[in-house]
Image 1 (cartoon, rainbow, N blue to C red):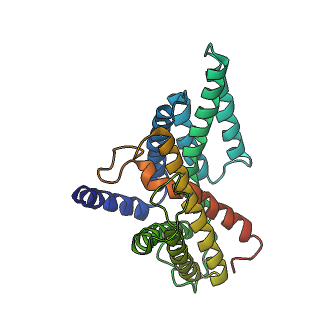
Image 2 (image 1 turned 90 degrees about the vertical axis):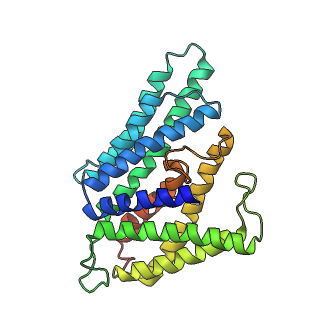
Image 3 (image 1 turned 30 degrees about the vertical axis):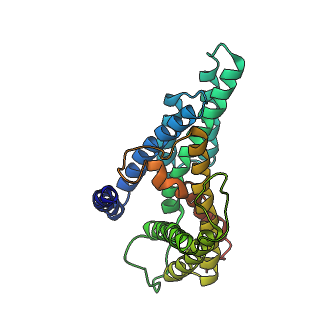
Length: 281
């Protein structure tokens, strides 16, 4: 507990400082985190018995972050990045004398690179965020991008916190215990309820429909939970408790960002799909 407290005291000012500074420092910070997360992913894949190549895998995530931060990025840039990962990983795997080993290296390296690159959608939320009306309660505090990023962060943190508290309090119903033994349905329900309330309130505060906020809260709850379970699956396959040891008492960067790997793309898709249709109003 003391380690966790000390780590939090160090981490929180850094995170808040980068958030307040905004772009491009925000993109730089996420880019650094994506490299560390990629290294942890590949360590877990190697521990799980997959042949991987670290260098091609750790290059893709910061490129994805840079691409998301580039407002003038051409259409199809994201698809081109995925294609590039698959092609480079395949070419690198050709050197392996055993065909099956080469194929597994291609698959696992491609997976690790794309999985860690999902963190780029955190910056994607900033770049596609719709403008806020002048009468919105949160108008004027931050730009629209950081405001919607705040919606993402607080909703996911709220889900994680209340899932933990309700799961520890009620301990009812096993939930995917073959992957994560401590998960319960009471935790999932408590976390989901909190996410819906938080997202509804914050979305309303951006000047948007509370109904859209409730839908967003449910979407972020489902994807945040899925992101957490997906990382648990990877750690369980690797026989590891944590993704790393960078943050004493907390584990690795991947342990702190696993929920965002799935929730950030969900919010990104939510914004680009619903705003043009006027469904956020």
